[in-house]
Length: 115
Image 1: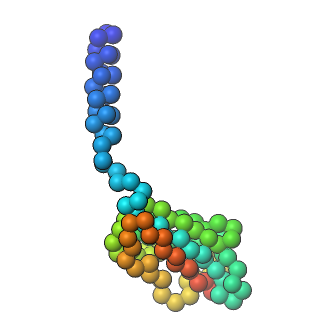
Image 2: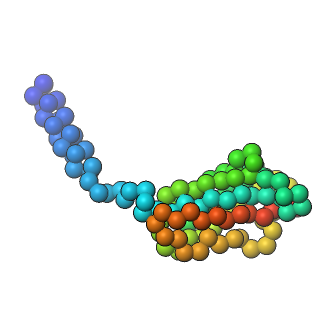
Image 3: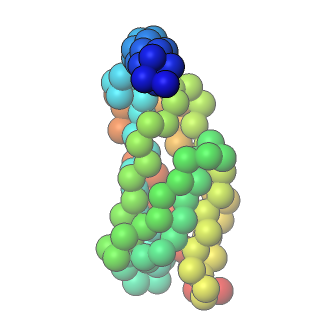
């Protein structure tokens, strides 16, 4: 029984060692999208706004309306959706973050209006 258990642990250790390669690129190969959701009438930050970038990456704004999305793949970046709290709507079309490069920090502010 101990022999089987030891063999299993050796196999698991070998598999984990094999996974430690260059499978995940370092942070410098990604971009960051940051910004602020704000009320267009008062210029005050709006908390609780969810911003989705490239479908799977998202952040929710803090009390001051700011957000930060890390690990954005390089290339064409798109604000996929913005979900404001009840009583607000996105003013105009969704803003774009455009083409991003490794290590770049892109600022995309989100204007909101009372609905």
